[in-house]
Amino acid sequence: MVSRRGFLTGLALTPLAYAVGCSVRTASPAAPAGTRPLPIPPQAPSTVGADGVRRFTLRAQAGSTEMLPGSRTATWGYSGSVLGPTLRARRGERVGVTVTNDLPEPTSVHWHGMHVPAAVDGGPHQMIAPGAVWTPSWTVAQQAATLWYHPHPHGATEKHVHRGLAGFFLLDDDPSDALDLPKTYGVDDIPLVIQDRRFTADGGIDESDATDVGLLGDTIVTNGIVGAHLDVTTERVRLRVLNGSSGRLYHLALGDDRTFQLIATDGGLLPEPVALSRIQLSPGERVEIVVTVRAGETVTLRSLPIEDRAGIDRATEFGFDDTFDILALRGAGTLRPTAAVPAALVPIRPLAAASTAPTRTFALRWFMINNRRMDMNRIDLTIPVDTTEVWSVRNEDNWPHNFHIHDVQFQILAIDGNPPPPALSGWKDTVYTAPGVTYTLAMHFADHTDPTFPYMYHCHLLHHEDQGMMGQFLVLAPGQRPAPMRMDMGHG
Ligand code: C2O
Ligand code: CU
Ligand code: CU
Image 1 (cartoon, protein in one colour):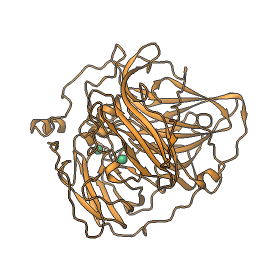
Image 2 (tube, rainbow, N blue to C red):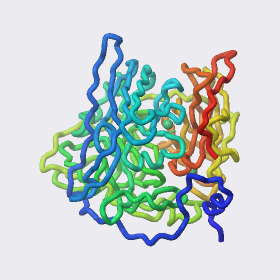
Image 3 (cartoon, rainbow, N blue to C red):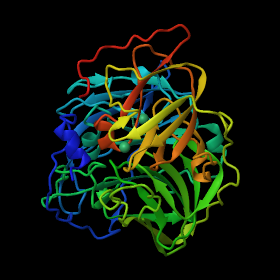
Image 4 (cartoon, protein in one colour):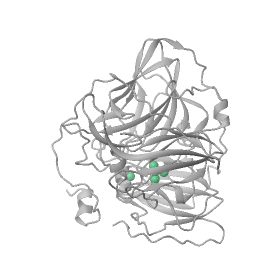
């Protein structure tokens, strides 16, 4: 039987596809679990100039990192050898980032989850040539949230992220400051990016083969290293968890199945905490959870097999059966007392009635959305500014996919006509789409219009995105006509 990947390659539709073939896999060299302290990405310094702009600098660069103990792995990072500093800004602030590309090839930096003008979104239309400097700026106009930044070069996003380019972008605001939540960065408020890698025998990152969900690793890397633990010194610790993997889903739980409090999803805090013992995260999604730890104990954050797998073909090949230890949380002998999570967090005003009929539909299948693959020179949708839209998204495939929209945070109105579970009832910018299930999403397009530069929507499994499972939309002012720029770098 011909695999779809082979089939597409046969039609020469996938010039960027990885070579198809059987490779004999050796397991990555192991690191003893929990023996190394979790690195905390530094908070990026910034300066506020006379123009009132809070300015950060990022330098995309090549380096090497001790991902595995005792060996150096060639990696890419921002202002360091791997990942990047945590950028942090407040609602209402004007921010600017000076990005220098010291890599040997073009890249871009996309502000995932951020409501920004399309011209500074950092997608495939804002490439930074080697040696060039890019200086986007915008005003933060959204609530406190755990966002992130990563490259978005069309056809090469997976490679750039997989080599280590990704960082957190945390937003603060008054309502979140007023809540008694763990908020001491690096002490009881911990950014945690979970990624999977496969290493070669000499400790390099294995990019040699891929599955139909892209590069799938057999080893967990947390904040850039293998085998991490976190020394917990407070009764409660807040984990800002980012699935920064190419194609792997995680099904997070604590070792003894204790409950934790889910307090925020992609776009910010929930109306109230949700007590859960499991949560699934697909690539690009974030959650904030508060875990209670007892003095002297070690409790391990783990990933369990994916339960939500109806309609998935080859679940094992997609990593759905895998179990991993992610991060050992080691409670100190005495823990500083912390307040219980407040019963009320930040209210969410519904964007649309749950029964609102969708005005656009998106079918996900193969590397396509609505039977089309990404074309840099094709605008798929134009959206009038100041409108609330309702989109219906359905995975018509037997592969896992998810759906990410730039510019906005959305609300899930319904899943197959039913109300979403509490964990999917807050602000989202990326949602897992199970096969055969219809997700009804509501979003509001505000503020920024541009007849030339589009925003993207796409599957955030990075191999799928690179293969063209992406579309482009313009947000237009009344009377504005599309005036896209012709790119000589179309796909396919
Ligand atoms: Cu996180 Cu279009 O990307
Ligand atoms: Cu994005
Ligand atoms: Cu996909």
